Length: 373
Image (cartoon, rainbow, N blue to C red; front, side, top):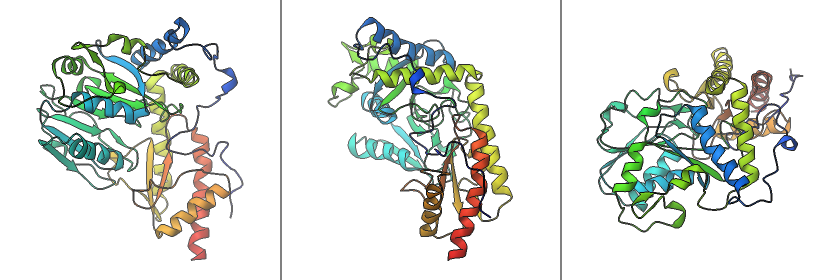
């Protein structure tokens, strides 16, 4: 039978993601709108975005945070083009975005001494093969594959290289050992449900030392430059952005950070993600026609949950379309490069009650499509 209860919020997209519970754009502090980001009021808002991020995430002393252009992608490109090339590079990928970094490093930066360690969707490479004396580039959580690294234990405390971590669907969702990470990037539109277009770049003291001691043998566009005269541009890490940011997006991000603190900080957001994953796992365990793309629970994402169905690709598309037509789930088809299936965002802004309401609709839609066939 068709379920009677629908999710109060059908937005299960993996990016941009659902806004936080209770979000109301009319309640944002809009006093900064129409003002220059170089004015005191603008600088204070941007500085708060950096300072509050460091405090809420519990970053180690000496780690720096900046707001940069072009989302997580911009932050990663900025870091790779500015710092890679001093030593060999190990690139890990098991989904489309990580593969993109490998392509950029090998074909755009054209770094010869590059080793690529890859795995199929739903799996991760053998982490014991990583050489931490090389620079290491990896995605903590594969947004398009639903697979993540289980922890940072594989990263050596005595490493000579830098670790570059694309953490866009992991920050605020998963426990991360910051001491093992030198460059961390993410975007506002993932776990916190913020707006797009801006990236966050976090640098360890080791990453700063690389920037100040290494000059890459390539031209750097203005939006990538983090040093001047061989020294870090410190103002960048207290809110003096390289280009003009959207101050509306900035105050939206600040609103999200305030919400994080109101639910217990990152422990609260991680707990919400874990609860959502557990709800989906219980459903999957009781239905034979659906399964996780990541078979190993140790590497299974609790934010971008990817599922496979015992249907042909066209039938899966029919399920996705049917759910959207019923206004119970929008944008939950698998990423275009991933195996056919569903990708349900289970990040911290997703209310568990909405997920509970969605799952019977999955079964209904599956049955409708299967019986039609």
